[in-house]
Image 1 (cartoon, rainbow, N blue to C red):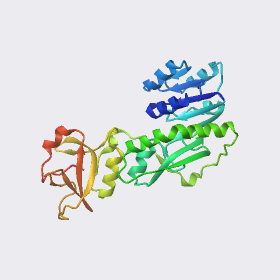
Image 2: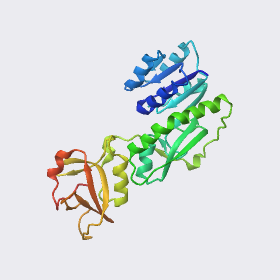
Image 3: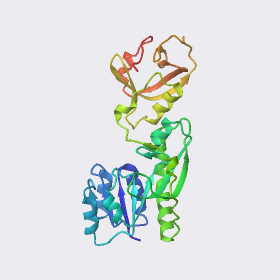
Length: 291
């Protein structure tokens, strides 16, 4: 079985490294920032395409290979593939970090936590010309516990992905893949997040703020707010029983004796971890975080 792998990042590295215990890919396609994968390709003398695959670049590379892949696996790859390339690929399977058709798009596990989902998962689906829309060949559910962060779910992905990918390869070898078309009427799509998207709105219910913070906790850029125009990056909050007047503005700092306690519309939250600790001295009781 000749396997090709298109992949990015630490998750891609972990899966590819594990695959090398059983298979030697005939090629890797890697983005230029995935240094660990680039090093792995060189260490195992695997032909590698490094860079942006679009405008025929990856297709030209594939055409130049002496050994052609029977199946291509896409694992955490940063790029969408050109339609022309998709049309010419052999059996090609993408591994996506959600229970498709829900949460198509980028960083789906982060969005799932933001939306207070209790489950996420991994979906293996055929690659077609659109984003995460191909027929599903295998799924695996993952529970999201109320205190888990985006980073915690990534750890679960790192544990689950390697064997899940191997199971899909085995099913393909045994001709046991049974693609099931997605129900597009049930699909949701979420776009790429940027660090600027993490600002907290103190007019939100405290449950939404709690999920907003844990979804984006380190090593992600983080949920943030401002006090006197200074940025405050928050990595952990918990619910507080502190009392307040309904006339108090949302974002009011009610107490700072142990940790800052902040008013929300339906209760208070306590900020347990501030990433940029140098702003701690700027936070005073009676001040109001900006929304």
